[in-house]
Length: 293
Image 1 (tube, rainbow, N blue to C red):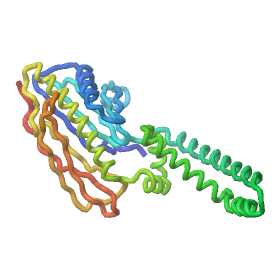
Image 2: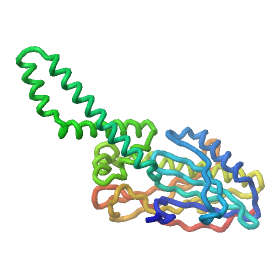
Image 3: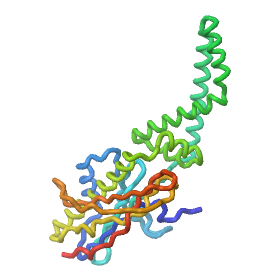
Image 4: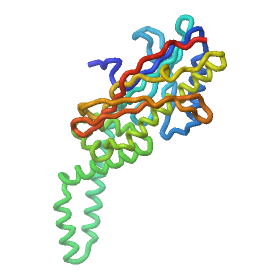
């Protein structure tokens, strides 16, 4: 079954600037420079192309900014007599799932074999009746029904270490597996205040960098910069796991001046879900009139 194009979208922002033109690539370069100044941990940027309308339609180049679980797709393009900017924040989708799962299964078998061999070597090299008895009982306990789950747990631990180092492909794949993904999430990838805070800071920092680039382009052309209301993104529900929201709250922090950049905005908001998981939602905000010279 094909996925709905809006599936996985966390938030969206757009702005049409009338009687204004610029280069999309110059804008992307300005955003990348603004991001470099912020030294965001784990950030990756790339240029991607999305189809404008499906099969045989032309492609549109976007700037993609990625963290461990979310991605920004930034677009800048001419529209009529003006120029528009937009950003889409989505949850990153798992890739190469089958390949990762096959690799995880093979690694589990390899680790299990090494554990079995190590147990045999230790038992053969033990001396004395007491040691023989201990390792003899150990060999009875450590059988394939114990070694395989133990080996798989070690593999999950290695996946978690790799994810903390920035290699999240295997983690994203294992989270798609029913039950096993839930077990992994509970043991190694539980939602915490810190994880949610860092995710929000990533979104705020990238959005601020984008606004800084836009305001810089507007200033050079003698056009006023965007107001606070014009800078607010529209947030959809950001769901961790599959909890049901009990309530919603949302607010927008005013754009505060930065030492080397124009004003930016930072949205926040959270509500507790029925099963103890977290649901973040920010109410949609109104958009002020378009910027004009």
